[in-house]
Length: 547
Ligand code: GLN
Image 1 (cartoon, protein in one colour):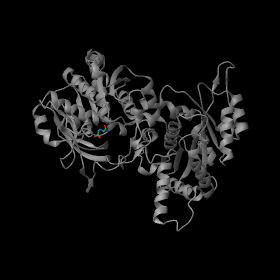
Image 2 (tube, protein in one colour; image 1 turned 45 degrees about the vertical axis):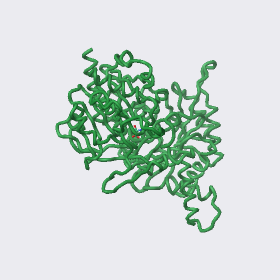
Image 3 (cartoon, helix red, strand yellow; image 1 turned 60 degrees about the horizontal axis):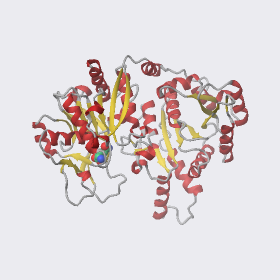
Image 4 (spheres, helix red, strand yellow; image 1 turned 60 degrees about the vertical axis):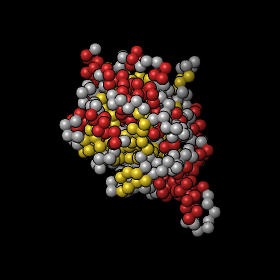
């Protein structure tokens, strides 16, 4: 049966709880253990799928088609363990499940209450698959004291009592603010945060303290004394240059040792950190730099494209270059010629997105890349825009567009080269969707197979012709335009196994121009960069050498 580590946060949000959890997962793996990471989010949305990226950053999609919190992306990037639907839950989902059971009469006429019905639902979620791994790490979103978080804190308190002694530990992440005037790191907010936790029955075993610099011994001892933890269980989490330094940095601080000590695991297996030493070395010692433009809509909030930024970093690590990302607002090209804005870049990436705003600018970015031989990677909407660009400017279908942008309008403005897909096949099953369905969960979501054309650039890049990648979209490139577009040179080099859905397009006579209907960024890892990102950065590096 798994041992459980519950990770909570205090003082302020955005301390990097997800990252600390992911790094701890990697450290336990380095000692030979199997791990699974879970996120419990107190907000009331049923899942983040319908939240704006401005609200919540990107939506991370799992192989089994769940739209989850971006922290699951960190978990996967650090541990390589593919996340599942059952690794992410929100209050909205918990309450929906409870209320559905109530309507079905499952509670046999009982009064439904937070304790025990809601807390039982949370506990059931936590224990899914508990026999499969050595350690289950459960991160509670938000900060202690949040009203929505209370049922989760109560549930983990009960859970630790339900289990045999010594099977659950609690790790609390806080901030030690540095006060310049007195030149001191302040422990009081952490003391208050721990007091708050203890008032709801939770006593942390380990404190992870974010701080700008090292924590002096005096402050460590003070924290240990006032927060009732052992001094060697006060872990300093200093600001890092790269998130990929975290496993090594936290190991040096003794995080994994403190966790094993808290469980009484003695002697502890020795860690093998060579994978992370290599990752850190690649991050710290690049041999050059390339600059990539991401032409998107949510450019003010980098978290909206978190996995893409990380996958580019991984591509850079594979090629030993630093990838500098510049965010370009696609709407800029509604007003201005893209050339002067784009000419300084070694490559252009157009990411996924929803809705019409900014799409004409993305089409112009694709045109600029095609005409000027600049490496272009179009992801999901970025592929659809590249296809529309080819249809309009090369195949002469001047009214080409996507059905997505004609939804509201009575009269059709575009010829729908990209159309709303309502029926498709997943594995052996048929899936149906209608325009009238809810916005939540009506997309082609999760892993789908694709077959690549023998000899195509993508087949070379992947080194195989059968792949599977994660999807999240409602619209598809219409295969009835395939012949017309192939005649002018845009090749459909990846298709769904039944040949009905275009998965990849490429311009073979261009130095590097690929559009993919799926999201390769979701599967990239620092120690196993995704082949498309690895090769995209390689192409960018070649361009930067030429200049
Ligand atoms: N809006 C497009 C669609 O639904 C693209 C989605 C995306 O880029 N993830 O098909």
